[in-house]
Image 1 (cartoon, one colour):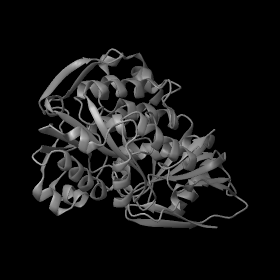
Image 2 (cartoon, one colour):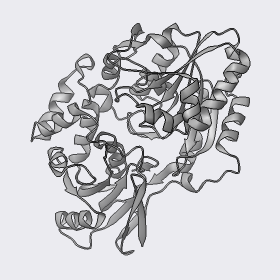
Image 3 (cartoon, one colour):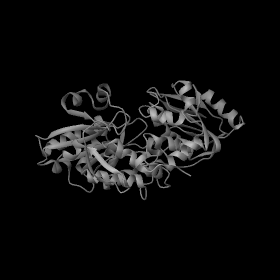
Image 4 (cartoon, rainbow, N blue to C red):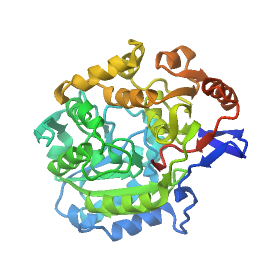
Length: 423
């Protein structure tokens, strides 16, 4: 059976003998069809908000409006979302002073070229756009998170008369789902606040997993921060493999988000198909631009690979590692169990940058070896305790050698960030 796997802006294919293939884990999300265009979906959602008045109503009398938008690492179809949102805000107040604030979290700054690619040249030329920096942007402390960490948010948000956000909803490997409240935390929060929320205690929590919101301490902190920051309205979409919106919700940050999560869950939950070798991806561009982000797609494989098996991860990684701290936490210590012990001994106020990603990465490495197909230098991949490969065929041969069986069972996950694998 020939299976294609997204890799950057192209695909890599391989033939897998059917007697070895345990399953191809894909969500019906990618086969879901709608006759409406992306803009029509967004406009319809804006006309029918959930748990909230219309955005145009909220905008009346509000002069200083901040519209939080996702950054370059998120495949949000902003060209279909931002213009209708701007139109709706100006319908309520034609003279509103609108700032589009890019929610980078702790990511690098979004470039001008990436902004044009994301929003289109017209929006970039005509609108006021600022990029959040978790270390240098002006910040305000607005309270203490339920977990005990300081809640420090970009001053632009706190000073606004109206705060709204766009985004998309996908399975998230420790926040349950992306979207909504994540526009605030980690989106426009200080590094101090992000580190406290992503502490080792929470990352190790059994409820801090894909598809779980209730009882998830990371999610609960995020909701508290978003409410405190007065996030008044969201527009979130669900996207398919082509990164096109197939469903949209608008309105209250909790109620509208819940409807989006319900829709997504109905399409992307899949049963695990245990195998010796599991092949996964990060869904291609833009989510596979660095190694750091690729850990997400690996967690889908983690849920279905056998103990002692092999995960083959495909991620182009043309933008490099994605986190220097992440790299050194892995590369500077050969004993990953020792590193895990150090993380678990730290309290939330001493969390170090990227340790949450490293903690999850070590957790899956303790279950299976990882062969990494990418454009990253081999020495970088080895430093991260993975085995480099430059084609699927090469990776599969290496995996068969590791498990000691050239007839080893295989499970394929063409898009590891679009499925919720149920063990």
